[in-house]
Amino acid sequence: MSARIVLDLNSPVFLDDFLNLDKTELTRVVQALKKIRGMDWNTFIAHRGSRWEVIAHIAAPNGKPAHSFRLTQKYRALAYRDGVYLRVLSLHLDHDSAYRGR
Image 1: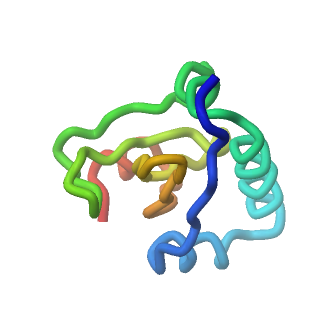
Image 2: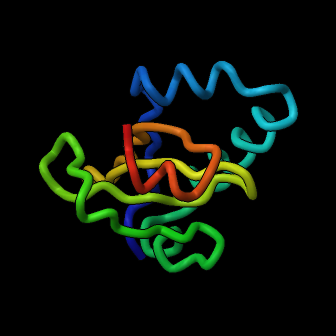
Image 3: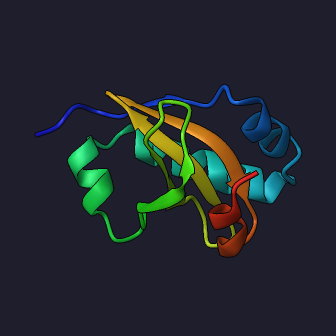
């Protein structure tokens, strides 16, 4: 069993979008983040619903490729793994924008 995920939601870009979500979407995103926080890394990566996908052309701050994952039916996030941390970089309303980054 791998280590449990620790969320880092401190990216200013992520926080700007997160804090501007309407009440319904905010609730959905928070529920998804709580679910992810309860998972270990192996479960999260293998979980069909997370759709953890490498985005090779976007470098994370640690120099490795960023990843996209599904938060809700509407929203994806751009993030990277840093040890036990899932460092969320940005929130995206559509699938394609996650692959363009910011």
